Length: 155
Ligand SMILES: [Zn+2]
Image (cartoon, rainbow, N blue to C red; front, side):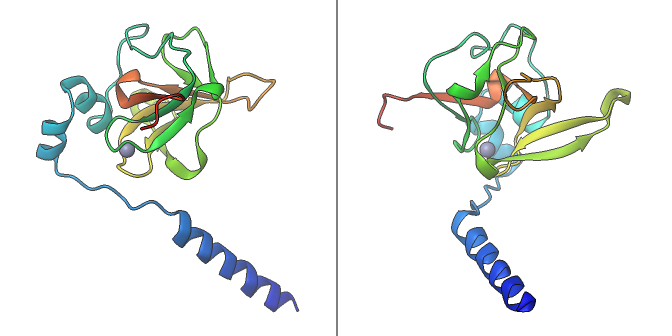
């Protein structure tokens, strides 16, 4: 019986993966350079960081979805955005499996880097000091790695 349940569980998992796994976007460096602005390229492809309080979405509270500026995958919802006071757009959660996590040991710190799971573009980092009343997580994201779509607009 146990074996049957396990087989069934694996079966469900494989369906889930084939149904929801997004196809990866692979582009050459030259292609990215052509498509992105200089700042988007620096942040998404070279893991840069924009200056605090400089990004267009830091104090942006319209209703809608924040997409990856590189491949347009939906990453964060406006309802999960909060003002962390850090100077970068902050969210307490991401949209399903569209965000990936990597260990980042640069600058003598151990941080968790967040990336777009579809094009591997760098987004920022996630920290454990987010709002306690929700997830306790703070996704600290560069505005330049995002593009916003209003809830009202059709496309
Ligand atoms: Zn992407």
